[in-house]
Length: 138
Image (cartoon, rainbow, N blue to C red; front, side, top):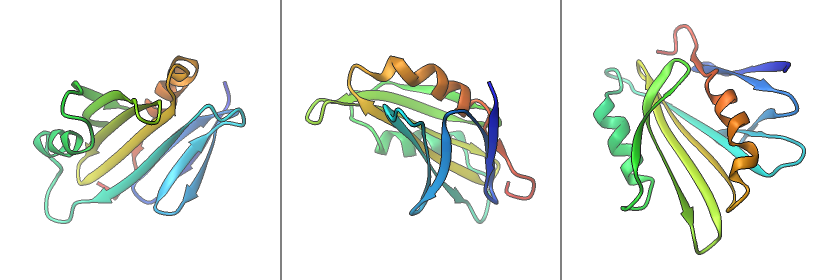
């Protein structure tokens, strides 16, 4: 599959076609024309030291329900934690990652209507596995 590279000052990612990336407010949104779900990536740069494994775990715990399982995660050049769960009130499937490389911290979500997640998750995994820190960002 062909891809386009999206990058900002801190990270870059290969976006396979027909997916496309665009900046929306304070994050990057990655979608495809059929638009079953959407990936959102926000980033932060820690000023004084590298981001620790403990920090990524604490961040993801704040972002998910208490009963959600938290797993170690590696997305390209970033490592941290992930979780997935269903928001039963809105019937929405969520998968979240909080990963870091050096001083760069990424907050990543994928969401879609519950029951449709298996249609895109393989492509979502392929896209996110191409994440790399940008030189000078970490």
